[in-house]
Amino acid sequence: MQRTGEVNEEKKTWTEEERLELAAKLDAELDEYINSLEKKSYTEGWPEDRWQEEMEKHPFFMKKAPEPGEELSPLMEGLQKLKYGEDENTPEELATNYKEDGNFNYKYKKYRLAILSYTEGIRTKCKDNDLMAQLHNNRAAAHFMLQNYRSCLNDCKLALKFKPEYPKALSRAATCCFHIKDYTQCIDLCEQFLNNNPNDKRILKLRADAVLAQKSLQRDKRKQERTEKKLEKEEEKLLEIILRRGITLELMNAKQKLELNDLEPQLPQIALCKVHLEGDKLVWPVMFLYPEAQQTDFVQNFHEDTLLIDQLIEMFEKPLDWDVKHRYTVNNINIYFEGKNKCSVHTVDVQLTLGEILRDKQFVVRGGTPAFLILVKSSEAEERFLANY
Image (cartoon, rainbow, N blue to C red):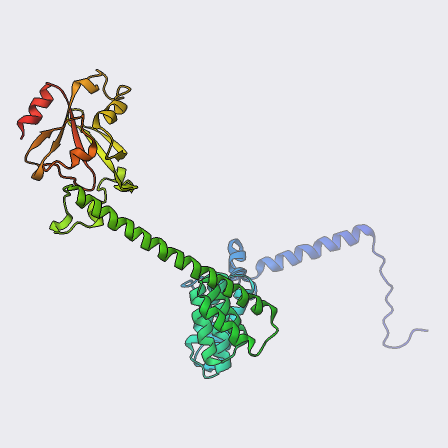
């Protein structure tokens, strides 16, 4: 029996072909609907070609902190204001924030950045003495890692002003004093530390090392003083012998009294070769000039008792490299020196010793270095040279 109001519908049976046809129709209708929608570009997201760059600017995803002067994203700028703004933080809060930054940089061995962070914390001049002591002590630690021992010591002393008997500051200050060889202060700081920590092995060893180093330094100082006194006596003796020999020296800056700097060679080639004593005898640096060839020879140690001819024989034993015609031989040269004020020239007797030549009243030692001129006998160059005087 069929009830009133009910529709008697039989369930349709779909063939596979009909199902595929219906699915294709629905896909076409969906594509038509989507294509009919108004097309708008999405402008609030990250550009496809720069998504990674934009992502790294986000505070949650950035891999490194912004460089000084670098433009910040609005979100980063807002976060910075929250953390570092003076309107949003008390001096104590700011100092704490900077201390945490410094600790983070120190942990990752970025000691210079840590110093900058601690310095900003110190500039807040907060009223918390314990916090200020920590900032100075932490900055001292960063300086220590960079081997800035004097800066480290200064920060340790500032930390101790805020917090007397601060163990870390005392310990580090003592170590810095050892590194800069201020052993007296190092020992004093060790004693101050040991008053409250008498069994600290590291400081006990540091004090012992400082005592030994101080004694060694004192020994070296006494030895140096003795050496300097001995050198002064030798220098006085050198000046005395030169004056006793009657040797004329050109004094620098029109002085009236002979001084050691008057014996300093003025030429770089022999700057380290000055007149000196061997026993009671003078040994000079001597310069030989060849005006025609514009060449120079130096004899670093010419004993005053050596005959000039002996030195010349040694010098000309082999032909000079630049003397291609072999004109410069012991028997084919004349030796001269310039007299006072360089207004005269004098022939040298090569059979005399250097000391005898230097005692000539016309000879002047200039720049601590006796000088001789060598010319080929009877040459045109010798004639021109002599004509100038």
